Amino acid sequence: MTRGYKYCPDHVRACPHARILSLHPMTMHRPCSSWPQPLGFGSGFDDEGLGIAFGWNAQGPLWVAHRRAAQAGRALAALIRDLRDLNPKRPIHFIGHSMGIELAVEALHHIAPGSLNRIISMTGAAYQSRTLRALQTPAGQQADFINVTSRENDLFDFLFEWLIQPPQRGDRSIGTGLHAPNAVTLQIDCGRTLDHLSRLIFPIAAAQRRVCHWSSYTRPGVLRVYNALLRHRDRLSLSQLQSSLPTSPTRRWSRLFALPRPEGILPFAQKAS
Image 1 (tube, rainbow, N blue to C red):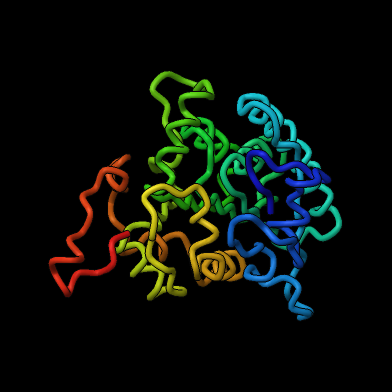
Image 2 (cartoon, rainbow, N blue to C red; image 1 turned 180 degrees about the vertical axis):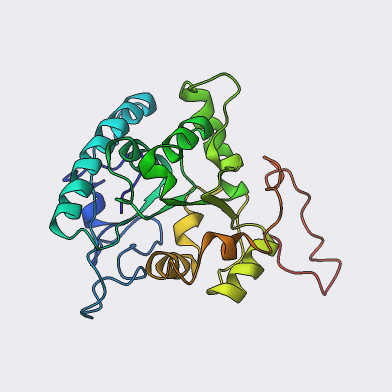
């Protein structure tokens, strides 16, 4: 598990191990559950697995943190190699938010095939071409990449593209989608996607904001879905996830500039989100 921009281990106000990645988090300014318990750790069961909170220095200007993410990705690769040496048959998965997904993308270039089994990117801040190159490596070809997106995150995807130079001209962030044989995009502010996940795994609350960078892990029910995706890879295959999904994500800014629903006029209208 790893967090994105602005967090730094041992920082008095921004240590992820005291907050979002802690079993017993400190009080936060925003109402937000930490990840480990909803992901199934700290329950006391013998088969709950080992949850590793991977910290890295993501402070400073965005472009500086982006360079550090690549360095941290190489450190993550070394950890994955050590874990594989200790228990070659044990599956290893990765879940990260925002720029934290860059660590997994970089690590795929430095580990053996089969070392990393499933990657969950929660509104990841990474470019499509860089991610696709990582998925074409020997390790990447054997890993599942679940690309969780939302039009709530459009502003942050736009800022990432504006501030971080793309690997190639015309490149876009993975928030606009990702097409690869071993990847699936789950747009969690799409009603059809939410219905599909509700039938297949567990209900996720509908989006309530036009702009939000954190809904990919703060939305009620969403971490329970990730729990199932990490622990039941065989039962919840990429092909099952892909079935019944829209063929393409909705366009950028479609949520921000959507007209409000006339709740006050039509008594049967749902609450505007």
